[in-house]
Image 1: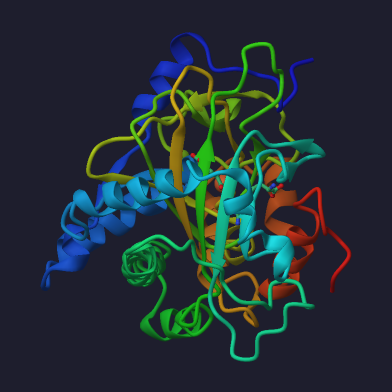
Image 2: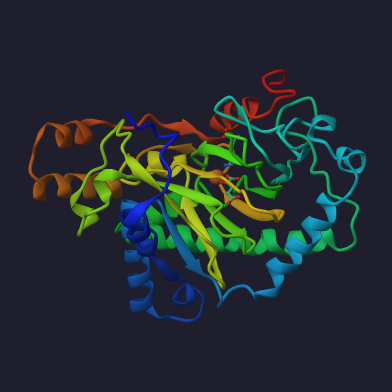
Length: 370
Ligand SMILES: N=C(N)NCCCC[C@H](N)C(=O)O
Ligand SMILES: O=C(O)CCC(=O)C(=O)O
Ligand SMILES: [Fe+2]
């Protein structure tokens, strides 16, 4: 039996699927009053979330191409420092979440990941480094590092609200419903992660980053030009589908393929996290992805996680339930569809969910602090 975590991308199906990942231009959401343009971008995001949980965002109207290049240069400067210099901002000096993690210190599904990283989170008012997630960010002592990254964080926060608004429109939410949703993300407990990936040795069966779903709301990933590193899992049932809106994803399906998602200039890769799975009551699935970086270069990627507010109570949205009921009317009503329709996701407090995840993420410190 093929398992989720062992299938590799290969053959025509993989190529077809990869070329299908849509590119959605956010320009209509940046300039002026192009209502039609906004509607069609919103519809494209909705379709992409139903089918893939992943899409490219063309952000040329929003960020200059030099900006992330500069961030990547600063990241490389940090990762090139001697180990003891990097350890000066170790997450273990702080709250076991904010700071630098050595190569193989991060763990996914019980296996060490072949990457090093720095994590920054939204600052909190009364920092307490004895409380997981509640300490202070630790910035490398490199000229311009802080300023350049803070500018990027501001821009990505703004992008988060734009994409959330587009998604609300894509789900057919009323203005009042959007205001309610917005109140759950308007003080986002965001995370910025800077990742460095040395090549995975050819004889190493492990992962640069093991298969996982992102935790929250929206991930905006900028990555350098390295190809063939990021892979996204596509369930088999979606491969030959003309109209994804007519399919309801089934629970526990393990058949599918891993497709490669390479960087496209001017675009960032966007995917939805587990909180969107709850809001959409499973209509949108947060998609498994992983990184396998072989080859010879040192890869850098910079994901920004636009997350709900720490205290947000995330529960299925009425707009998603309306769509699910409509889908039920137009699709053959067999057993599985009935089950999906009747299943209501349990509400989650985002901060509790995140703390649980972070507690299990590291070789060191994990689970010791609460
Ligand atoms: N904030 C986010 N989404 N970080 C993603 C890290 C995923 C790997 C992590 N070790 C895990 O097992 O979840
Ligand atoms: O480096 C990448 O391309 C993806 C990283 C990732 O999935 C994550 O940090 O959550
Ligand atoms: Fe991820």
